[in-house]
Image 1 (cartoon, one colour):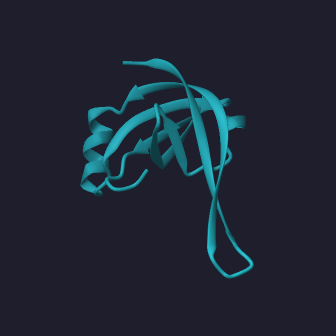
Image 2 (cartoon, rainbow, N blue to C red):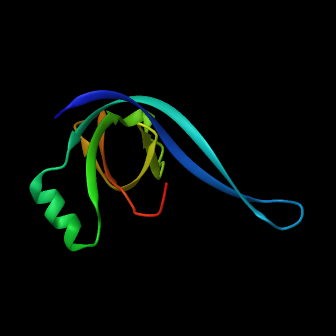
Length: 101
């Protein structure tokens, strides 16, 4: 099920307004990545930890700056694990949390 997609890597930054309210700003970086399903071993291992593992995305190292979320097809996923693949790629493992965007 490998397919190339345009994705948004999302970094959430929290700031405080002049009246003390927390403001969450999302900084999005558009990237092109190879999306695939996670292996059954990965799915079972993540599930044992309470993680709803959905996808594995492969992108270039220089594009990933520790972003915590990935937006794909209008849905936000949380990065729960990364894996360096070779010298120029990184794999992001994504989970979908119920009740979160």
